Image 1 (cartoon, rainbow over the protein chains, first blue to last red):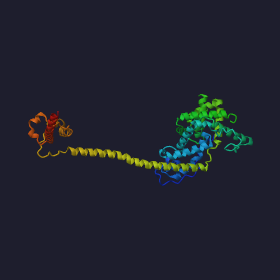
Image 2: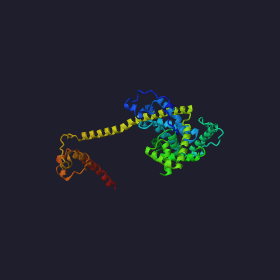
Image 3: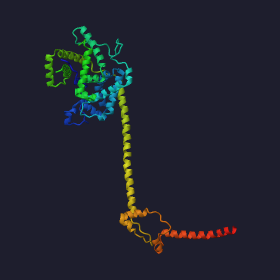
Image 4: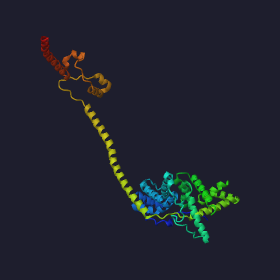
Length: 222
Length: 199
């Protein structure tokens, strides 16, 4: 059975105790306001600095990874991640708790990444996934698969992971964004469509095309 | 069902986004199409490989510090903007208030100006009936206030009865002018005589 990544609540830090400043109504018990991320964001809207720090700690690993995957440069990914969070803070009044906070922040991240990828000087950068010096890549050598039955299988799995990373980096930006948001960040198609500013049908087509490209590139491993 | 459609749907199904009736249609297609069945196995393996990739990156401490510093700068900027906006909101209020005050002063001025001024003693005011009937009393008053300065020559009907207007300021001025003319003519005659004698 294929395993789809779903953002596991157990991997998140423990939710904050209910804030006395938040409205204690039935809406808090059920609905979007029950989402701890939304509650944190509402506290950020009320200029709570600790809530912002908590939000940063919760989302920055995912955002940084997503941005790295999108722009392919560690330094640029860090700059853009900082930009994402500064925009979240700057435009905190625009957030409405009707939508999930994750969708909102990934929309900001996607827009910043796509804008960055459109910039002409981007062509001069060297991407981490296409780094020609494979002796010591930035993320370290690919580790063997712990679930592999034989060492050979583990090495092959590690190689495949590297090839897969490279193949994902070679996808067109929108396909890459759609695939990453859906498969890695666990957003449903509708939210991916919101983040990319397109229809759900377009998201299906983008993911299908990305999947076909990856299958073609990794035919020997699959 | 076309194979391309089936392959698109199998991707959607692996993302748990395919409706149940489409899923059944896909199963029926896969049962008869070996190519698509093999393709489904490949897609599943690809998705397993994707699931094995890391989904988070370690965030450097420096990034958090930098971001929080940037947030503090934004806070200061927004505070400054808010205070500036507060000042401007007062200024925005000052405009309408000034306009309203100006309108009020003008209205008061008009009201006071329209009050009937008592005529000076010994002056007989002739009511401009025609003007009053056309534009009303107010119009007449405004017309009278804006009337051009009369000429020194009185109109014929007034000249016929000078006793009625003897106390009017304009006629007093007229008398002064006549007096001045008489003095000037008196003074001018000796000079003319002198000029004649010299010539």
